[in-house]
Length: 185
Image 1 (cartoon, rainbow, N blue to C red):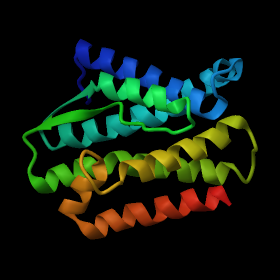
Image 2 (cartoon, rainbow, N blue to C red):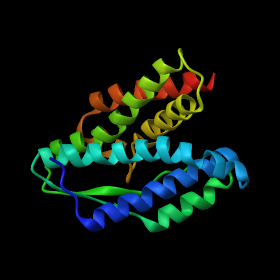
Image 3 (cartoon, one colour):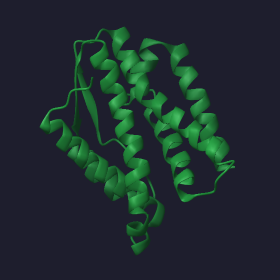
């Protein structure tokens, strides 16, 4: 069972709001439309972000490691400012982990992007049956988060995964990148 401190819940809530606002502004610009789609991004981007972070936490705690999310307020502000230009830098913070071996740390790092890939695949399948805005944003946001987080350089998850297991990295990155390319066509 996942355990949370009050501080962690406050950090998750702050990051959830800012990530959602970033996607709203990036997709709709500085207009009333950003406020109109904010409920959609609170649901879709917020859940994509929270489930990503909870996947890290779940795998870490299952491996008997201490794990707790901390937001990065500087990156939240930079991300929000960049979203005005349509650029999304979703690096709102990270699950801090202590007590993990390199092998365990690689598995913990892989968990978040895999959740986003699975969510993107679910939304992709739903896109054949529905053209709703929720499906559209669910597919775009989750595929973006999967690829973005698999960048193989620090501080991204992809760096830890690449250092741990290159085959696991490719098994996550290739379908994530292909899906992202496919939805752009």
